[in-house]
View 1 (spheres, rainbow, N blue to C red):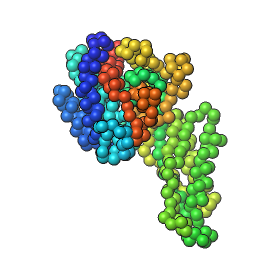
View 2 (cartoon, rainbow, N blue to C red):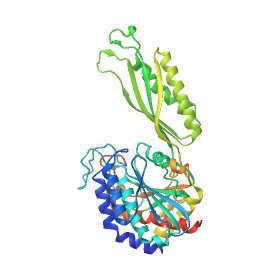
View 3 (cartoon, rainbow, N blue to C red):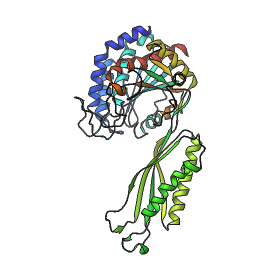
Length: 409
């Protein structure tokens, strides 16, 4: 099969992929609570002739091919949404207080489209394509959960690929950017800092221990890690996003709770910052007669792109889309449009897959600002250019077919 044939067949599926996307957009779930989405995906796969297999708490897997010997290539789509009330104004907007504001509904619809393409050419697949539909990406738990449940085994996965649509990119809709080898998305860690003081009347602060004062100094002191303890080329973000304490203006509370997140691009820096955060919080609190504890919650490691996969997918995308709609990060940098494009500030829990098997992340431009797609991901008014859907399905399928063809068992 040629790339021209695959693209033509993908365009013939355009109305179906669009229907899937809009149906999924109207039934968003968050985390592992995605029962409606999961039921829709399983029903569509079953109707295509796939045998679906539950994987983990809310994931599903299906296999295409397997009739001819070869390796196993995994294609992943995330299915969860965000706890955001939608304000996009589209006629198919969600009404349940949740929203596909990150484009995961497009990912899922495109992988369902790829499943249709692969099923139509199942006898030609030189090996097996494993379709991974994953929950809980936004809380960095779904990928790890499915790995623990065996998604990378039986049959054992040899390589993996994900696509992420991007709103507000300065490229024509449907343009694919192939990540450069190495880290393209940072590790993420969520944390909570609890400061314990001693409550008292606001007019008599000397009779208590003010945890708010200690918390304020901790917040400021934490920013000195980046300013004074890391090299200038260390890319790190440490953010305090919440601070909660007290219920009355004339009462000094007992405790303060602060929540935040860290983004780092290497594991050594990640470990160093977590160690210093604990030392600074505990030491600063003690200086103000309070006590502090730091608890690290969910997170994910760095997403590492495999060198061979990056080079291969660069070629495959040019075969499929032509040189005007497929770029590597190096090419964008050479044109002056890439900048730090090889590294995104947003974390991605596909990182867990990338730490286990050779993997690659592709970015799919899905809306130019000058064409009305002005809002970024995770915004309640974000919209995506749906014209990218059939091409995205073809990208998924072509990458898998070509890699299996070039990497015989």
